[in-house]
Image (cartoon, rainbow over all chains, first blue to last red; front, side, top):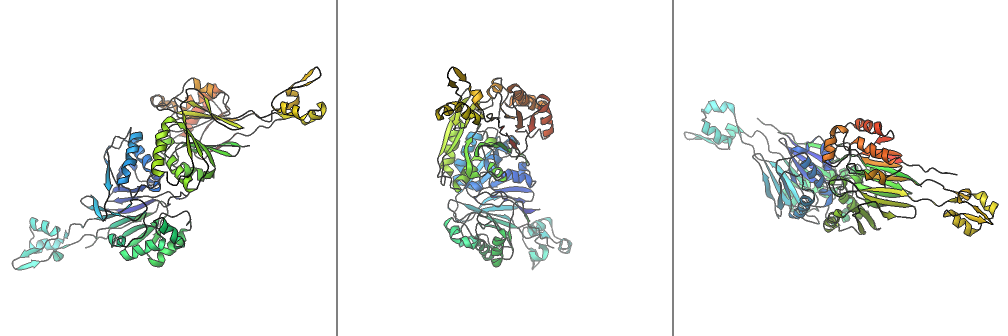
Length: 308
Length: 308
């Protein structure tokens, strides 16, 4: 029942010798979701011991090169590895010609289906759903169409308190109802669900917000998220450049986390102008103490808080 | 007056965590020529302290992804670095749509001219020439159109022996003639160039042959080359696979070097099946002792042998 983020790259558009470009993997209950795919992503996956064959689906924020130039090599490798299950890619509609060009020139040997789900929403919308997880996509405020993603465990079914089964002589049908949050009636008395059952854990959540300039709706869209990744391309010193390029400063990222009431903030996507990650981190923490400035390969686990 | 090869990547199609894909830099007299451009090439350039801004021209053997997927990111970076001199790319004609697609989607910010010189020759042909260097391209024997490159210093002008100037009272005009290889006449006597002058150094040469199955003409086309790079994707154990995929074994690479009378052989482009580079090297050396199996970052210098 893991819920773990691995940051594969932390540089922005200008590459750095010690930092790869944007790519992350969120592992949820043993499934691997790849978010963005900068150059060298497949090498970083190997370095972080994430098996390429086990990538479940891809979430692409936008088609700028630093978020996507690792995709052609990765798809080619998946072809060589004889992947045979479909690959779902959630990406802006502008991604369509990028994929089409790849398939026309490098599609030989790609024997798995690649399904592009074009993102066009103006407000948060569920794009991916399993029994236990859902993913919402929402627009960001960047130079070209760009989307963020919110991964959220669904509310778990209630656990019935064992001692209550005998006490009230609960039937199989009643137990089923209680697991779905229902109450039980005995004569005139309603026994509330809260007495009969407990929520085994609080659903966990992760939001990815890159690249974006700040905008008021965002903190509401990621309200209460356990772990928020927000780009922090610059320090406040370069606030003007950040605004001009539709990026955020470290302070702005931290303000989003604070307003959203996030559990923790992770920042990256550092400009080559801001090589001192300490300055980025200090700026974040002055607004939102639970901040981390990520380095390539960093792992952030959201533990399951089991209840009784 | 350097003549130095830096091997940036030594893997073949399947990426390895410790080996980048095909890319090399030949530095001649301070100019940097990039040969192939696999994924991560720009990072390897940075690692090897080769300034991206100073890349002179590009030589692309073929458009398979492991030789070219680093090109989009590199061109984007050169745009951000504000390169303002034209970039000449010598590449197969099949490269044209690859470049066109890049420019149509990622061309914004590329303010330098990119000139594609399409290669179509059936025999060696000079494609690049300066006062001191020439580069021949020649076809290889691969699944798709593929070319090798021979970089060769031109014959230097002769150095006039200082003591002969006084001895024969050589005029400025005569000195010019001698530098170009001419003789001098004094009365009835012809004084041969060899008495008056000497060749200051032997021209140096480097040939790049990847990817290719062996074919008889190749060793003639790179005859006497000082340093020969020849792919050695497999050991003989996988000879059948090599033939099927239009690749070479280590033995075949070494036989080419031997027949060509090369000075030294460097091999790479290792299959992920042949992780034991020692076995590749042993196979080469059993045929051609002056063999090296390259690792990423290896540097091969061809020193200038000055004469008097």
